[in-house]
Length: 116
Image 1: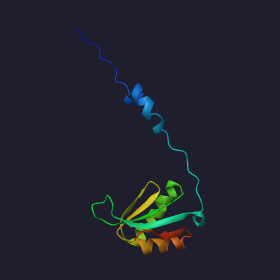
Image 2 (image 1 turned 90 degrees about the vertical axis):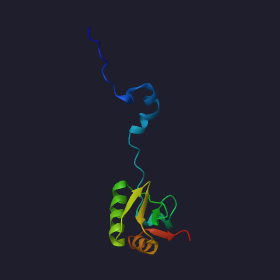
Image 3 (image 1 turned 30 degrees about the vertical axis):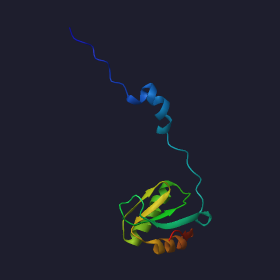
Image 4 (image 1 turned 60 degrees about the vertical axis):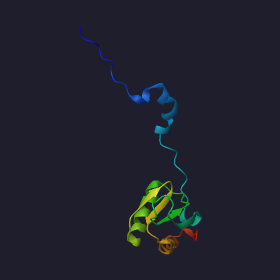
């Protein structure tokens, strides 16, 4: 006699997952994109949580993901280093505070240096 196997179900369809994870699967609503002169940016060097490596962080952006990606690519090219876009911030590897601030000012953003 052969036992009938249950058809495999999608784990996200189980009640526990429906309660907590179903809404998070939907994309978040688009945030309003402000023109560069209306954005107040902060540029700082940080080493927290990076095993002692210095990273230049530009934060305060109110732009779409595509705009941030294009800007990050331009900053990485002009600084000659790697980087990433995380949570509406652009991280550039190394201490490039002055250079990043100058580039952002040339592009029309209001950028201030922060931290010591």
